[in-house]
Amino acid sequence: MSVRDVIVEKLSVKFAPSHLEVIDESDRHHGHSGWREGGSTHFRVRIASDSLAPLSRLARHRAIMETLAPELSGGVHALAIEVLDPTRKS
Image (tube, rainbow, N blue to C red; front, side, top):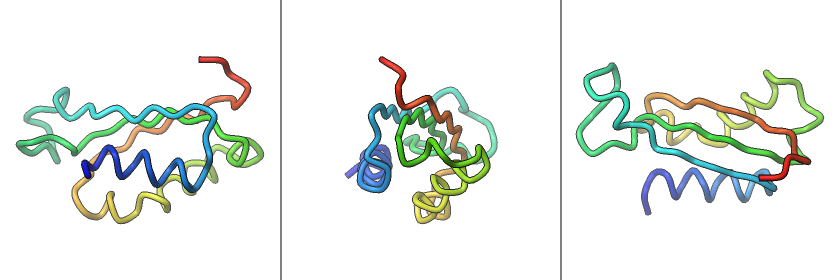
């Protein structure tokens, strides 16, 4: 299973999002810190979930980072997080 697929699975199980995008942006960071051949180093997460809605921005980011802690300590160099309004239609 790819790193992207693991991220999708973990976030889906933990937060039951109404919207979830996990974008591997590694190719945009070629030559930057943390980049390595093969990608799977830089990701963007866009998520909307009722379980995240009542939390502060900091608490939302912490919850997502804690869920993905093994990936962040095991090769994912950067994670951009966008928490969306769960009522958003996409």
